[in-house]
Image 1: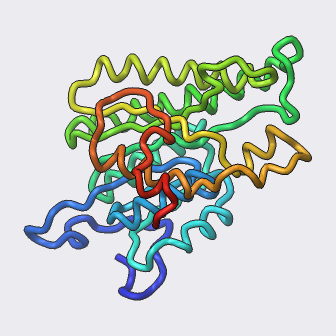
Image 2 (image 1 turned 30 degrees about the horizontal axis):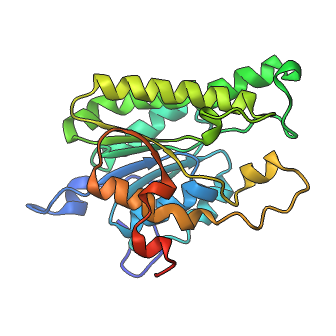
Image 3 (image 1 turned 180 degrees about the horizontal axis):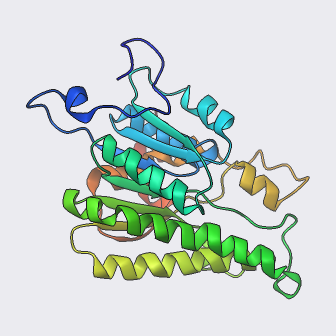
Length: 262
């Protein structure tokens, strides 16, 4: 456990029994991929504020540590640098969640846009397309499979971040959109198969992120809202445990948040 008033703990597991204490409620645990920046970082912070223990990952360990340093001082965090497409890394994430008490929530946020500038389907390099499907589809499905037994036991939830590019035809977005569409259908079927687990796919809308900047190289995207602006929508979805399905963050925003009231 972190020392009261000190920084969050990193890269070490917390003894669940000692952390909870005899007779105290089991702390909730969330696994958030791609948590070093953008929406993943914003969601990790929100969950920590809600009292979740976190297992987070990103490719760059230094960037991940810097992102998690901004969490509440009493946050319990296992920050693991690695590639989500690596089975060994996914195993590390699963074991870290088990050590913290077992996962209640998986947020599949890690992803890749693909080549930048975005190529037309006619010119899309197939090796880049394979990578897009590996990162955006196969890796999150594999991690979901790994955590599902524990999520079933806890009546947990799987939340996968998607995009309107999965359902709309935008020139240049064929590779990313096709991968997200595949992930969406996998989630759709998973929701039909799972009785105790909520399975959500959420389109956060256009946000001011590094990935979105890569989609529009050289353009000013400062008019896009920050990732933190849609966090209330995710908070509502998780807290109210809404039915499995596809959601747009804009449709989930509480009235106060939509009106700009803090």
